[in-house]
Image (tube, rainbow, N blue to C red):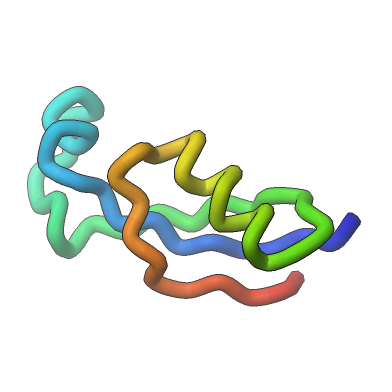
Length: 59
């Protein structure tokens, strides 16, 4: 398993729930363990259903 750093950008509904003020610009970094980049994207979408691929890089 590799570690991937994923940058998340919150969608409006998720941001409202979390109290994020600027959802279009607010980014959070999350490190996920996955075998492939596609699996890392799936895990990021599980964390944040409105995930928009910003950045995905092996760590």
